[in-house]
Amino acid sequence: MKPIYFVTQNNYKFQKFQEAISEPAFQFRQLSIVTPEIQAENNRLVAEHSAQWAANGQGKSVICEDVGLYIKAYGGFPGPFLSQVEKWLKTPGFLKLMEGEKDRSAYWEYAVAYCEPGKQPASFYTIHTGNIALEARGVDGWYADKIFIPDGKTKTIAQLLDENEYRRNRDHYEKLIEYLQSNLDE
Image (cartoon, rainbow, N blue to C red):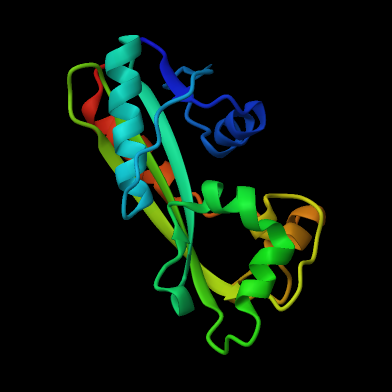
């Protein structure tokens, strides 16, 4: 079977992908390229566009992932624009933006897309709900991990990562593997 390339320049992200996928039937490799990130209303569209662009440009079967944080009080902002917003707001600015907000509910959208050259992408996603904390807590993870408390927990994702008590929701990876098992020839 030909390898499937996980597109990222982030070695840690690829390592976490490999840890989450324990499927020996597939050979995953990292493809360290930058893909254009379109301005879209959700992370699935961003992942699909990136996967199709990379598959067609590189002539390889690829997987692209995109993640966004959607805050109810702000109509889903920053959503798929999280990485751009992170450049300006950082954690203190983000918390300042949330000052006085009574509804602190939010969710992560994890999206992954698979694409072969010349074909349409297949995408899968999962939603992880929770609330925005009043203060940043924890060390590990992205800045938003320091302010997001998953439903059913009292600690931020960063605190849970610090204590090795947290595993990101992997439903989107499981859906991807089911798709690959059903649609790829051995």
